[in-house]
Image (cartoon, rainbow over all chains, first blue to last red):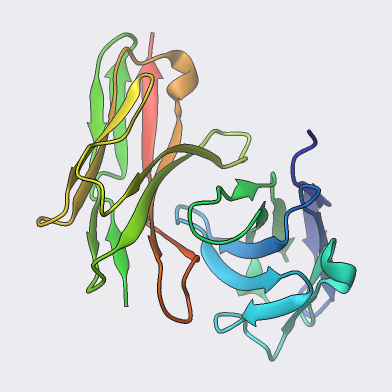
Length: 114
Length: 117
């Protein structure tokens, strides 16, 4: 069974440029999560999808961040414009549902903003 | 709001020895789940073990076991017979089961474990 796929693995951009991250969850997983992981910290939830609906986006900085999950499968997280403080690892995870259903994480995208 | 605290930023252990990683949390919830995740240098987060708060029996998974003290809000991870492949960041995480953020994981800052040959 293929795991959670993320691309790109690494991205370096200049500040004020836009950037997008892509996530393909495990087949059949209806719940998808985007996390932000700063250096030396634990992941923090940005947004959670149930199928194509964003059911928790309370931690997503909506002035510059946006996300979508068309058809309830793949998801894209976008930052426009990027700031220096956005340098971090962006993790995607998926699960069959909430609660005890294990969250499976992708390898992450390491973003560096210069 | 829930918080998770891991007070040991770094630890090291000799191969084949036993090590215990500490985690405390704060919540007003009576039922919840607790997890330990492992993040090796390659960055892919892997579930190590989970505990349901209503269960008094401590969870075990092969060489990994927890000491869950609900009253003290403590959830430590014991790794027995440490192996070189156990070298990783270990994150303690909390999940509430009610309310708007149910199902979301709240992570601690992690403990970097190094297993030395």
